[in-house]
Length: 112
Image (cartoon, rainbow, N blue to C red):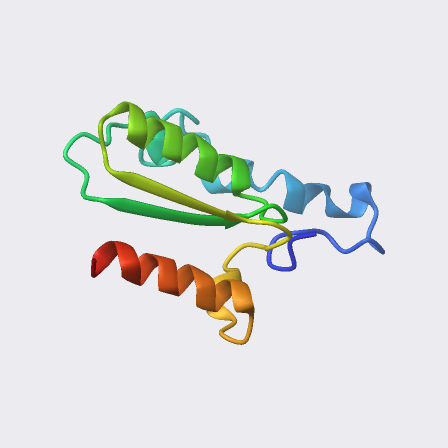
């Protein structure tokens, strides 16, 4: 359901397999636990206040949850805004009410 990273319904799994398994191309044989490939396997010690935004239709939603938990466990002041039915980078579409809402919430955090 993610228009930026999802696979259209008219395309079969077999035709989309390379897109689904793109981590192989991204990692190029490197250890998948390398923090340079996935920051969640590194340390967030001394990180500044962090705001994560995702949606229930975002292919990376679970990554946001993982990062949030890791940041919190390391004592970082962290906020996670998860919007129902929203997709990856939805906030770039300024006409969406959810986009306006997320920027309002961010402003309240950075300009109390």
